[in-house]
Length: 545
Ligand code: PLP
Image (cartoon, rainbow, N blue to C red; front, side, top):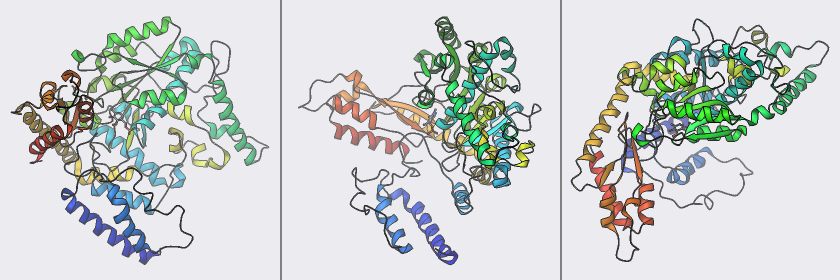
């Protein structure tokens, strides 16, 4: 496609997108297709000869769009919201046009510099303290925008693992590093006398070996990474344990799985609103330490996936404070943007976050108006990331980075190449302003209140609210006693107490009846009748939204 071809196709695409949004409400929300539907429609191999754009575009609309579930539909009732905005979409279009991996400052200085500035904009908007800013007096705050909360947690877990190993290697001296800027260390040694890791963050300098060719230096960097990895598999690593709760998203257990480390899900109770208490954490740490294990990371949550629970960070920081190897990460994937509302900050333990949390992350691509994907990770000491993740072969070395004049974003993440995600943050925050951003959140909360009142006032008593409403989230289920009335003649006897399952309505607009329906079906409930009533009633309650 040439420039004029793109101009024409681009105008057409924007027209189609506008038509899509204008008619979205008339579409069914879910894709009306069966598994494998595309197999017959798409050839088995890429075409030998080039095809006309018009044909490709038509096929997109006729073959692909039917298999799309409309997450932007006003009646989308599933999972969390995945809001997008036209500003975010336009940013992604510009990013695609300048397609740019941005791993080094010199790859495109704007990509690195805008990201650093946007991280500070976000931190200030959320009320994070100066410690999380790249302009902090210590100069160590800031962070990076990654693609998902899972990627964030894994990235943080690597840094947490390295810090714990270093603290253990250095004995008591390590504790001093917990709250301040990390010190540089090379070839630390663990209790068994095994070298754990070379933690010199300035590998750019280390890679300048006189008398070696660039290829040899590159090879050295690879070998260095390999030997570090092998050495980290020692006895100490096998004793590390990561904590979450039974309500923590799989971001924690998956990071532990990938790193080959233990994950322990601590119990929480409904009387605490499913949030982790300090005492539970303290007891787990004591038990693990007695057994020779080393707690190295806690994934605490502000706004769990199933019920919006908030771990009691105010109590938790009092416990983690005295455990220098324990990294405290806060996963606020859905709810974190709520910190931009001053009235929600106490509930979310902002003071505790600012006082003693090591890292914090929210997904702007959930409730925060920024087009998927956008997961900013704020960290108190970004050197802990660069110490854990920096590997610099010769071909990535630049004078600017060697002399520490710039931040090289690749050293704060797992992959090398990266997307220019800060552009959509810039577009959205400027176009909405902080006032518009807060209005968006408050409107969602108001809508969820209206929805909650509808559920509670339901004359048929069909629904039951099962967790305290939080932010724009209402967690409800079929009322067990009501669903029992839908048992069909041919069904086996139903246990009404198990015939319900919780569903979530987030943002006042979304919910998911599938789990409830599945449980009901298993119990022999007349699914069709129940489903019809469920949806009719929900639509009544959300019609005005
Ligand atoms: N954490 C919480 C609390 C979530 O609710 C979710 C997703 O719904 C995630 C993490 C996972 O997010 P991601 O898809 O960005 O990994």
